[in-house]
Length: 311
Image 1: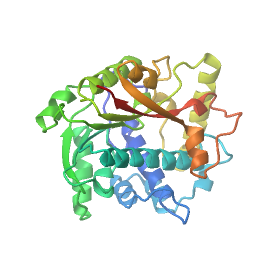
Image 2: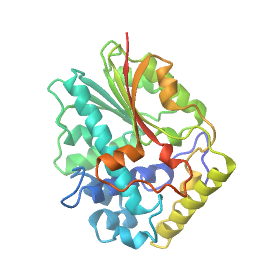
Image 3: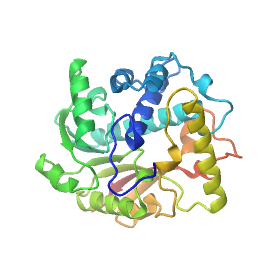
Image 4: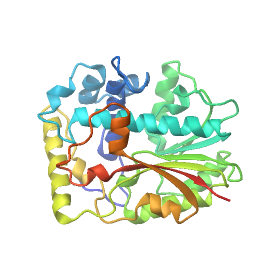
């Protein structure tokens, strides 16, 4: 079902299922001698969601080679590599922000992300996680049942980002006068273009000088041919997953229309940027780069952007 302005979901359906999918990929990426990340909470969180397909994948019962017929960008092996370098990028972002003295972090659309439990946060750090109430309740309860404890002061903000989340964040104790480290990981593509701009505007307005931000910045305009390629590849991946018992049409979840480039948009609002392409991150971490004839067209244009707000 295509996205609507007031659509809803849980961790087993629609956009919510992508949080479980990402956690399953993090679980796979945490296995092996050459693992780039270590997320001990990914597999048990996926298991608790209860989607058999993702549980079998996260536990290793279902192998990624069972899902991939080639080296496609939407294949599970490629997705696992992408999630591994993406996770490491955002982990390092928060680590560097802590070293710079920032003691306030906000994770937007936190999903099944467990950074508040697995990273070594400096003493005095407060981490705010924002997501839908059902997602926050599920993750908090599940991790407590596992005996997991946050490694920073964790304050959850249970609200949909389409509502007045700045007011809810402030009510939870957020101080806009203090520098903040913000992350929007795997989020912007699921927002309409105007909602993306509004989110980046709000982050800028709530940030004191010295604040830091990390986002993914995808292609700003996709021509009809590339759009058709992207949809075809997503539908092919969906069909392979459907054959293993899970039905999710990726093409219906994202907004592929023209939008502002997130990095430039932030730069225009006073952020000093550093950019890394997905290709650069893959190569730097010893993972195969995307092929030059990538069937997803301009997916290789995906950039990981960090910014520091000037005075």
